[in-house]
Image (cartoon, rainbow, N blue to C red; front, top):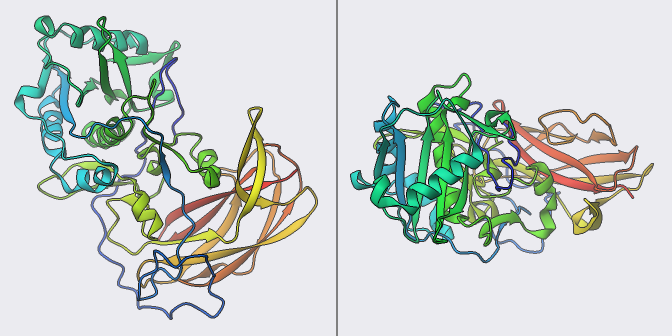
Length: 425
């Protein structure tokens, strides 16, 4: 489910959960195909391509940038539930176990995060009945009040590594600007301040947004998303940390609708959701790894147990766009209105696998834009590691902010998405 930035003055990160897997599949048993073809793409570096020829070249994939703010290097998770919530014990167990899990190591260690800690002393069960409706601003004030007076509230004292994660019961409707918050997000993380101006990092899981998914799976998926981001980008009001794609890959900002923290970058992928195995057998969401993306593996970790397959546009050039009156310098392709250009797509996988289909569509690959700006034809409909497929693009209308196009690599019904931008002026 695609999510938008929401909730008044807060910077909020939404989390979707449309099609969770019931465990990772085993590696693809398809017969290995031939190695790279004679028309294999050339790059300025072969970093990321191993001796076996998988991937065939170092793919031009984005990096999420360290903006300079602090991370929570040794997170302590405080799980806050309501006594009336029948799933309270499950959510407490989840918070206690996630920090030592392989999932946590895979998603956070490269960003300087140690194993998170929790335990019974970090459980809060609110004894009063939950409200039937609460605004986001009231919830923010509630957190600040409880943390600011722990002697009365009984909440564990705040420190520089604490994350308070609140699970709002299904019976509690969270609203933002008068609307149900579920219309725009499923959960979020933020920071607030006590009356003594102490910073408080917290996350919110809106159980009532689970739609047709069971509430526990929905909640742990959303919690995994928000806990990763609360650790790697905790101080979103004043000191951003790991958020935002590098300048050359502004296309990914457009594709994610500026939802550009580590878990955001993966939440729309077809293979983003899965259920782990014992001892951490919870429904989870994968999160972006700069290292995995650069190496040609699935950029969302823990990686699925199948070969990664994808395609990128080769040889993008510097382009300039106008976005919300700002001039954006990035990379893409300049195709003025009425002109045609052929773009080479380099296909790669990180292990032998069957051929996959490849196509280029205008927009994000999820829906058809209301206004068409591009006509696209393909030289081939499928390929394999090291192949090059041409996409011939004709611009039929202009757009100052550039036109988003997305490469779809599809195998067994799973799409992998790589966007690029076309400057039309």
